[in-house]
Image (cartoon, rainbow, N blue to C red; front, side, top):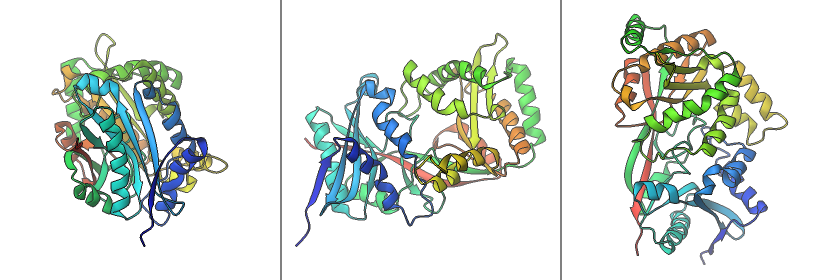
Length: 373
């Protein structure tokens, strides 16, 4: 006789802990999975400023008392209003290799969405595209980056079987760090003179944090047409600054300003921390912090986190200016490879990576489906 699948909503701290830690059990034999820090996930799920305008519910799937899956549903009321949508998002989805369990988890999210008058389910997507989103569909044999989730190959198979369709795909590049080409150097210098744009000197981290709000205002303008993006609130900006810029390495951040000192472009990188997080295994103490500190100082690869220019500069090519600066910094630090953030597959600006010694190492997909009423 088949054992009953129980779907239980997360209601207390003990259940939240189990929700957060389930993937470590699921992926314990997978060499490509990188666990998030438990405390970081708890903070995301309970204290993120987007919860001021997002409704979040979480569920666990159990069989005979054993956890066999998890999922979160998110109703981003602000996004639905701005974009004129009636959507519920799914996120933090993980499941054993059992289609029935996946179906029951998604049915639970869809039923909640239906009860709220919503018409579509989409994801994986958290509060916004400043958080992890999209499901791995190609590149299962690469260690995942911190800015993305790993999943087993049967996940996208289940999405197809459950009637989901592709909405957008993201691709991620691995780029070999080679000497800066003369062509890139000439282009950067020419564009700097033509558009009167130059690099802003960053003297210390306090200045970087102060500039952080202007930095993110550029994102608000430059990303306004990007899939799933809605303007960041002041509280979200503060969160991003506190969580990211505090560990920034100054010469791995580029700020472009015009002749009037207005910030017009940004780029931020950080040494790759996925190996360190894998060693930490979800725990910052006692040894996780040591692994992370070591990776910040001694590393052969770097992650490209954020890039953007104001819309008025979108087709000027001025991003070559910060490409040159970061490229030179990568060489000074001894980085051998750079890993891009996820790039929308139709993003023209991402084609610049094809001019380097690069390869696509991952493709991730956001799905959507009508909710049956």
